[in-house]
Image (cartoon, rainbow, N blue to C red; front, side, top):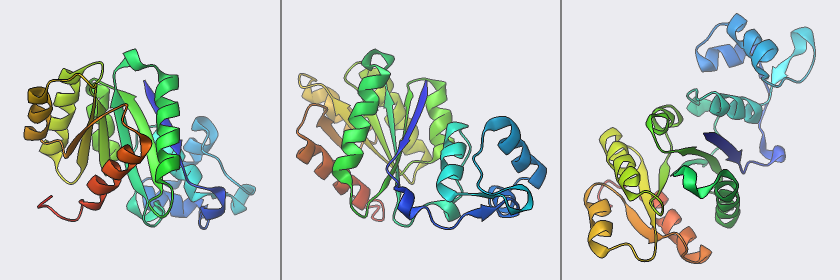
Length: 210
C-alpha cells in the first residue's frame, strides 16, 4: 500500500514547465511525457503546443508512480519525509497522523510526505523517493522497523526516527539506536515533543557527527 500527501500550497508552485523541459528534467523522451499525459494522468495546463506542467503536479505524479524526483523541481528548503508502518495501523490513521505532523512542522521546512507499509516495496520506495527522514513505526512491528533502520543506514545520506510504544523495553530502544536510528520516541508523545524531535534530526543532516 502506498500513499502520498504534500504540504505545498498552490501559491508556491513555481513556474510551469514546457513538455520539452519535463522530458529533459526527468531524463526521458518527449513521447514518454506525452504518454504520461495521455495514459497516466499527468496534469497539464494549456492546449496543444502551449501545454505546460506545473512543478507541483509533476512531483505528485512522480511520487504516485514511484519514480525519482529530480532535485531541480523540488521547492527550496523542502524536506522529504517517509512514514513506513504496519498495515495493522490503518491507512486513515496514518494519513491523519501525517497531515497533523506536517501542519505542526509548517514554516520554512515545508514537507513532501509519503507513506508505505513494511516489506520489499518499502525498500523500493526509499531508494526512489530518497527521503531526508524516514519515520519507522515500531508500535505494531518492531522487527520490521529495525530492518528499515538498518536499510536506511546502509544507504546513507538520510535520517531515521523510530516511533515506539510506551512499554517497549529500554534494551529494545537501545538496539534501534545501535543499528542506526537517529532518535527513538514514543508515538503517543505530545505533538510539541514529536515536532522538536523531527526538527532536531532533520537539522542534523548536514552534520555527520550527529
